[in-house]
Amino acid sequence: MDQNLKRTIILEHYQHPAGKGLIDDDTYKRADMNIESCIDEIHMMAKVEDNVIKDIRFDGEACAISTATTSIMINQLKGKTVAEAKKIIENYNNMIYEKEYDKELLGEAIVFDEIYKQPNRIKCATLAWDCIKKIIG
Image (cartoon, rainbow, N blue to C red; front, side):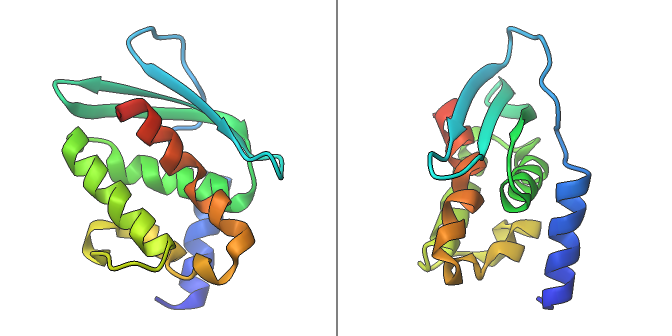
């Protein structure tokens, strides 16, 4: 993927993130995560009904990479079964950590396919994905 297109996608998700803003609803499961070495802190909630992820919401303070990957992840996982989501998460992590992965499963998350070249940004790129794993098990 063209580097300019990657930057455009990341910037769009950073400026207009999907699922931004928590709601008051006890039917959602919640998790909080942060990166101790920077300001990134995410509060996430997800609604799972009949083994399908119906909604994911988040709030917090995070850099462009963390915010964009959270937004992309939300778009990618909403409507998926928990099993489908886990497969996507596994593929995403495999991509981040330079293991074999199926890029067809990742949608826009493929924009982070070279994040491994910036080891200090890997935690930014995985924070939300680790948080949703805590929620869905």
